[in-house]
Length: 529
Image (tube, rainbow, N blue to C red):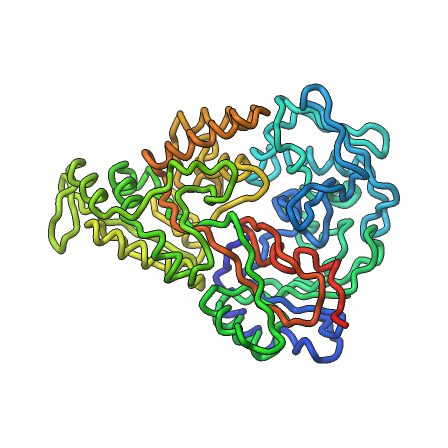
């Protein structure tokens, strides 16, 4: 979630950038590379860092770096820096990768097994300030076997481990000389990917140019710029004026380009969901009856229809309804009567203005959402409206992430999560009590021993039936003891100038715009003939 933070000055910078940041894509070449072989994309936010050691690109699709493996359009794993898929032995506890021959970092130094070992050991080092160590919990040891082989030994058989090796590899000869938390590598990265970073103007834009040493061949798109435009309306305006080649847009704005010549809309299915965190430390949200009542009171179908214009699905939990591990038993309808009954039985009685109270405390709490995010704002307002019908007063406030983060412990937040690849990838960090309050992991500080046991069982089992059963247990528990109110799963919408071939979309995680989108494979695009 940290890569989604919108800095305090981002909106101001974005508005200024509308005038100054990029020349029109059709103009001659410039530092932004705005020419026939370049692309300028408008996105809502920028990463905090470009170092994989701190989380950048850990789920794939970094244009600067490569992992041992990568994913194709259908998310099937395929070799990247590895010459082939891993050899798996010892009952699923040993993974051996052989590196692709002739790969160089963009500075000309060769890739070796030592770089892979350095990357994983540094990520797992307790002194490295990242919040995704738990995703590699299964790793007991990683070692080099000569210059071209890497061997991972796991503590336990971890079924989806291969998918974790999309983690980008960094050069030990550069990153190893620095503090991974504060070194210049965080903003001046060197990798093996199809592009190199040529300029980063914080809060304004990042410009990338083709890597002449790329092992996969020279991209036809010679440069691209990610213009940081926090405000949805400004992005749409710049796209319409020709200042941007493409942009990620909310449904209402994407719809305005439907019949515009020379523009094409792409819709990507996703695991990205919106939910309200209900911190157990909150004086009102800590009451389980309040959380259960809110779950029953929320009208998910109406949110999909009115906020997303149909570009999404109701979220009955963290897994979308078409995920193989989704439990249909947890599908539930909007039921205001049930919400009121839950509150009545728990002693929350209607009071002044219809707002309930118990033991002198009003059923009232604040809900924060990040400034400039219209989709989250609309979800927050709809949620507050539904809650009020049940007698719960939800006060909606916008704020920057700098303001939100210190308050997350006991204040509700309209949050976004969702990971592709395996249920473990999203559910463990969202719900396991060992990660409560660990950055953006388990923001609600949810603590349910039965859920912890089920998550641990699913993580350590290779039996597909046992894993499905464990995740069904998790989903049922979230209905009876919700730590979040799950609202919608969102389809991602992108509008681009229609002058390139080869554009596709993947099934996307929450993190999108910067890494995901029709530009996930920009190195493979071809000019239209």
